[in-house]
Length: 67
Image (cartoon, rainbow, N blue to C red):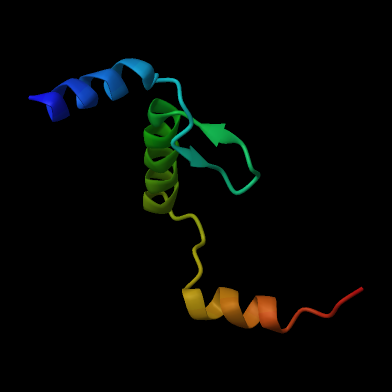
């Protein structure tokens, strides 16, 4: 029973507006914003947005010259 009370206290102190993720630009995202962000990405990919494999990204990053 004590554990349930602790869980309830944690739920009370955790706000729905708390950051649950960060964008690639470092912007904090709430749960709702994160779900919307993922849905938007899924829609863009479904509409034909260009995507890259992990290997393509790795090769690109490793072949960059330093300024």
